[in-house]
Image (cartoon, rainbow, N blue to C red; front, top):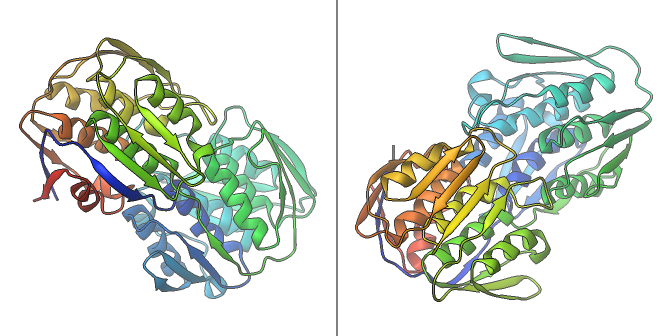
Length: 417
């Protein structure tokens, strides 16, 4: 296991290019299964979660070639299996997208229940509700979800009881080659939902409404291969924005979509940062004290749960009291104990964290519990007095490509041990 050794007290300055959205990539790559021809996917973030998806595609029989550093050619026409090996599917949540993709191709699939970050229970009841409405019967045996088509499907309406990104994408994948019209209501609206729909439409799918509360999918008989570029990663961009604020830095972020960052921009301006926005870039600089604020995570277009740990780390250095409320994941505050090892003054009561800003944090030995918690610990470590040792950094590698060399180029002092 790698360990990051972080020398605190840096101020990050310079330019950084934001990569493709990890949350889009881990859905779009499984979505290639439904194509009837080769797909060329550009702007793929080369993180470990993506590598795991690629390994599954190869195991299923797909032919994959790297065109260049961030572009893959995926030919799914040779896929001849509908079962994802358990050992390849237990370590991340996104493998459940193979459920929808494989039934769209074979009308049957077998995939392990989702794993990944330990953020609390990950029920897939909304996924199963959609599959059932689309004409599939399901069972769960020994942690494996089995789906089989039980009859002719002629269209249906699905109202999700809770807003779910995963269920929305899985329902789109399952419906894209079905007969009739599928109407999905109370769906998720995140940018990567729109990206998956755009990807499928580029192959000839008929999907409208992605990015709104209602998505309509009229099934088609076949889907052609396509060339597609994944959208920039709003969470990677937000993370570097938070890092610039925490370290009193000045960073220019390139290759972004500012509209995807509106809720993050609003909060970062609220705590005192100066943000200049261009068509596909923005500059974040910070001088003076960090101001306290209150944050509540919500589905898009609200403040994203995947930015909550990073902002909590920033607010631990604010001049005053902040309140952060986590409405999405029940166990997302597990990392707080690690911040407290560094001197942060945070009290958690259920889904609410009360943060008393402190002038100084101190180097300590801490462990990462999930991707975004790892980013939060990096933020805190770079502002510390002294040296911080961060263990279990494989979590960070799941969501951030080459983060250590990128930060060092901006002025950080981090080594990998």
